[in-house]
Length: 126
Image 1 (cartoon, helix red, strand yellow):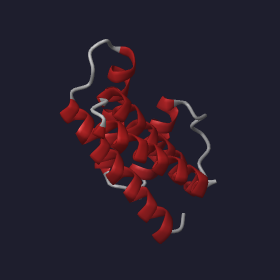
Image 2: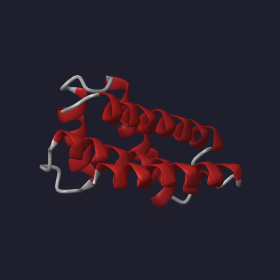
Image 3: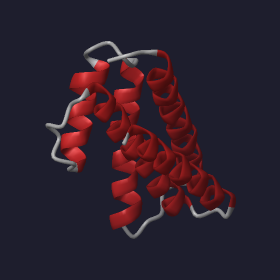
């Protein structure tokens, strides 16, 4: 399950990069967030945690508790996950687009997030 979720995260990240190249900031932020969301689900599956009920808030909360607070990942990844979720909500639901610079940062943060999870899952055991 973790491998399939990581693959899904990688595809979302690739889509985010394509959308960013097309100057679609809202779309890029959406896909960057879902890269992080799927990466977080993979990491939670790795820990054996299934208490998040797959809601956005539940996944973010469980990620913070079981991966960041447990010391598996740096606190910056928890903050980044929250920040990109807020940007996604702006891009998805507000009439004003996310600024391109913010979208660029979101894609970079998502790449770092997914990369850190890939390293975690390949170098450590739960």
